[in-house]
Image (cartoon, rainbow, N blue to C red; front, side):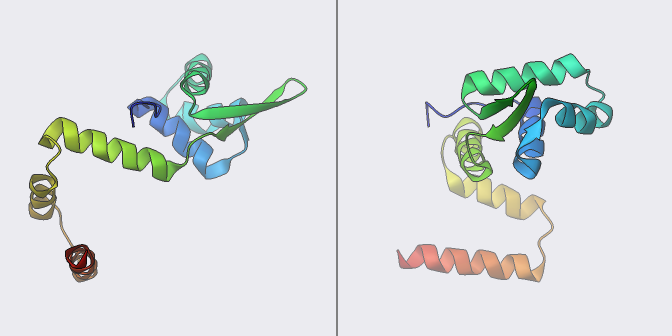
Length: 125
């Protein structure tokens, strides 16, 4: 986990766009996120460079056009971010997090059934 790239909230938005539409050009990311987030072109291009430096993105140049692709999966990032959050906020203890989420979140009957199945599966291990 220590070698996995740490992605900021703003960089996460860029990664979401790239996970969704990969391969994608910088211009396509700018056109999608610039107006929606009120970010300048250079801000987005700086984040793309940072994500490359962190090892979260890779690119392929075709002439003057760069195509960006994720170097890490969304699932990997979610797992790392979840564990980091769990450690930082709850000292690594899952129970307080789960209790907090169940108490503070509206859960459908389907959600509750799925959680029960997950807990039963975990209990069998």
